[in-house]
Image (tube, rainbow, N blue to C red; front, top):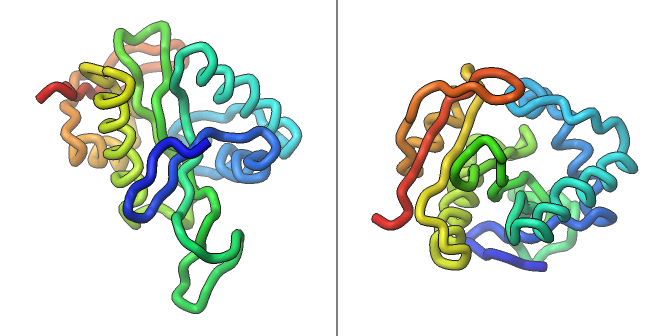
Length: 183
């Protein structure tokens, strides 16, 4: 199901069959493991189960979750063209996580390494914040990063988040950011 469309991206719900290989690749990428954590997914089959039990469950339980971010284009899937672009393939995740330890939804995002530093993280996160405010009625949104994930912190600040300090979480201390969406 298509959720959001931006100039270059489509953001849609994850599908356990269609997105298993993509999620497997993302979850095993070195930066994902370093900055977000090892989710214990070791195969596309496990990725399919992870999508169903984690992401799709969040859609049902909370009305939101993390979504697939795809490059938009009118070309064939999974093909690189002479201009160097790839069209209609998932490149990352973006969306909201409901955490029992936080008092507001948590914005999350992750991209496959080959799609970093091209503005896709900002574009998808900005669209997701607008969706959170306009469709989901969020007044504020939080974001957390590992203590050494400076790139995500810079992106959050570019989006308008304000650093709120270091807080303990079940897996260790993290940096906390907050944005007021009503301004």
